[in-house]
Picture 1 (cartoon, rainbow, N blue to C red):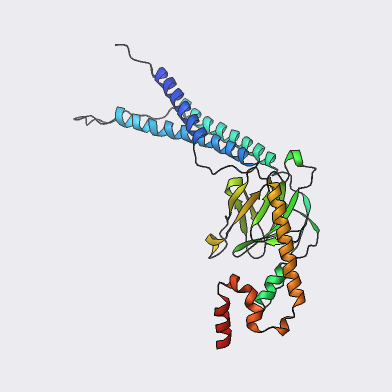
Picture 2: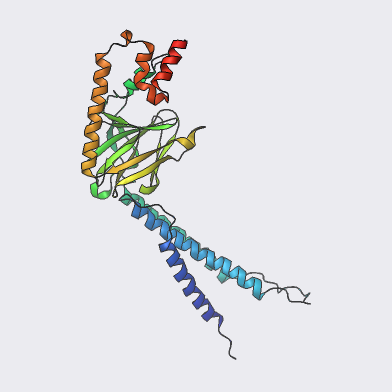
Length: 329
């Protein structure tokens, strides 16, 4: 019986490994649903890396298993193994292949980063929110002050993900100032004066987030957008993207920022254009009504329970409980 050449076995194994790795690399379900224009770029790069990783895993583990079977110690065989001192062609091969792979992935990653806008963040006007910090019984006043954030444009160089090469000379459709604090995200819309604890954006709009941090380093991460950008104290950063799928997606802080880092979460809600216009109108009216109430009422004329009553929901207590606590003191 004629023995099959090793080269033929190697060719067949290579074809099988290539087919399996490509199929798994393109059909896995490891990533969440794509919801931004940048997501397919990142997923394409990830799929290539995952395909290469599967191929290397099959080659290495397959070789180990074959060698374990073929070169196992036979019963009654107490002789030494064959002395193998080296194989220069093999060493060149397993050095050259990883080198080519690493260089190829490096060039590919730079291209993806550039197409996402990573090379183009430049000087942009950033809004600075002025929030008054007070003590004592001024909890409600502090909450009101936060809704009166004023904007002062200041040109500063930024780092992060900017406009894509196609939108390089175009201003963003929507600009939102994002501030990270321990342990929450605050969103300010300079064009409408809206302040929110959630990010609301219209689908298909070119959105620019101006990121900053009040205390320590935070990291704004939306897994469904495949985007993550640090928020740094004193250093403006930028994240620009286009959402492509309406829905609600988690926003996670991906930088260890303190004891309650794990709870620093919110969500980005991608609306249809009509839903976004409705949300903006409703919030502008609501915030204006709150402002009018603050202006119309003199806090000095209110009792403690009356002063804190509008904020009982935020404090997690009922109005009756608040009244009994005040009376007891």
